[in-house]
Length: 220
Image (cartoon, rainbow, N blue to C red; front, side):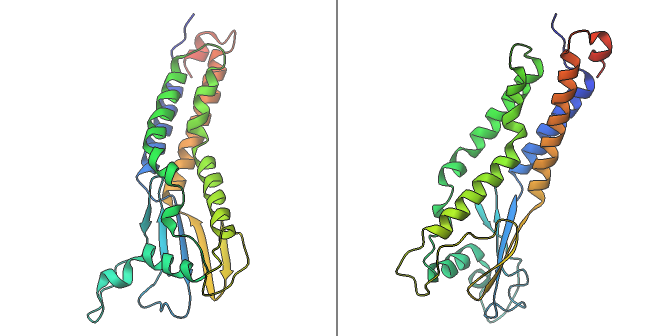
């Protein structure tokens, strides 16, 4: 006999999907470089970029200066590309092109699979939930993979010779005279929170569908 999702399961699932959807429109991670030639007065957060699910954005705060055009001093994606160029690293836009292109489609697909998992009760029903639950883990794995690629495909025409290296995934690091910082942004917190809600909904749904759960299981 088909058992509709219990109210608690439905509420958790909808909350989880809402949080996951919110993460798509929020910065997931931020990366910043600081150095003496980038004064804090102009770059209070360093040369900073924000990583989203489908693009890389400028992470520098607006700083008004009469003698310098704002756009010239605050376009930190291009500034970071310039810095990376000196050590032979590829431009930022070379990374994750496929992931950026298909991210909107994947979000819709994973959401539909999770919704289908709410009502489908056949063999392996819980597999339908896993793609949406695994989103933040997938982001981290892909992010780390591309960092490895950027650090291990350095061009030999670089002005400064740097041995292949693994850029910092989480925390602080050092590359030549630059200090690097890499930390999750609030979009990652939204994504993780969404995954936790979906995981709880999955566990409650699994308990509800166990043989003998009866009416009590249907109440959540």
